Length: 481
Ligand code: HEM
Image (cartoon, rainbow, N blue to C red):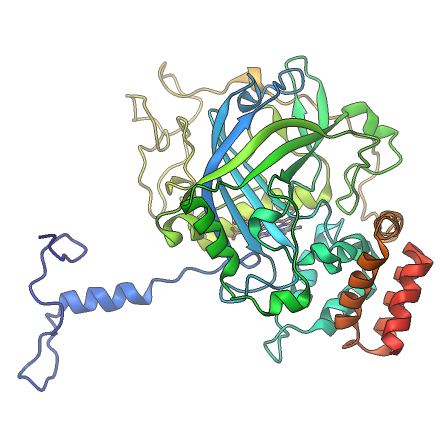
């Protein structure tokens, strides 16, 4: 018989009846098992993610099909055939944990690669661009998309009020309102790092890189009407059951690679997150396969406590000057320290699968062999400062240093980027749509925009017109009807 125990491991003789003075009460103060149970219950919740709260995780494998040693020293990108374990988390952005899987929203697409030189987190979305190119507007943007502060329900007028004042969102709004805005399932959507990241190689050469994860299941989407008929948990159930049944979802991994120098002359700012690089300029190079093949066994311990950060980078794979990315390098670690705790990286789902040796120590929930960090294999654990004189203590490795980055600037200022070409790529996307797709796009826009006031409608129509006159005309005609 497996005996029921309290948290200290002591067997419990009666879990039905609390201890009382007489059969009718009151309770006595020696009810320590009851107190432990109630006290722990009160602490079951941690803060939900401030964005991307509703999510679903699974483990899998990344298999490299093209050696990239010409471009990067990243170990997991060398030697064709190499396999790296990953943890993936998909999410909606604006809704809370108890919202629906089937809202029209961007989907988060996060991957934690447990490489032999540390964890690389690819914290992307199912869209190649984003609503903003400057991070100072991120909290305002998210406030406008989440629940209205007075009514506590989402307010489409707020969505469009933000977008009307921020035309840099137009490209992403066009994607969100298109048929891609509601995926059929998490398996039927692409993933993108969206930002420009970087590689550097053994010769100290840097390349700017965009990552793409193309679904092997094919893109499949839902209309608003189809989505309304779905059970709120359907996408999670679909992911879990497909993995359970051995029908492992997979993605073909591709990169666009730009030599560092090209950035100085390319007519598109490669660090503007509202822009894509046309494939005709920088073709997609296939480099691997991603497969998800193992469900989590405890949703809270693994998926909820997973902590992805764009700042989790590995030698050979770096960030870029993209201002949005730079802000994210700070924001996620800060969120994790608040949401999960200072030692979130010691929780198994977040813990690197390679040795970890550092001089940071202690803090709530520290489990590892400090001062050298969890997973330490070294015998000398007495020193907690660096540099030190101990031969077997961890030391920095200058051979993996990132090459210096040349900057083309002589002024520090608040540069206004609000009017930097907000329309050409939104217009290009509109122009490659079929008539049916244009109908869907503009119907979806009008579905929300009709709730906004006349001034917001006018400013939005002006934006659509600048992207393409037909785009503006379709929305404006539909609003009149
Ligand atoms: C989650 C901030 C832009 C994708 C989060 C979280 C924060 C945050 C605080 C919650 C983290 C946690 O509690 O674990 C920001 C800021 C941004 C920004 C400040 C811009 C300045 C973006 C962009 C993308 C993105 C551009 C995609 C390209 C995600 C994803 C998650 C997330 C996928 C969920 C990660 C997971 O699965 O746990 N973001 N974000 N975010 N963000 Fe962002």
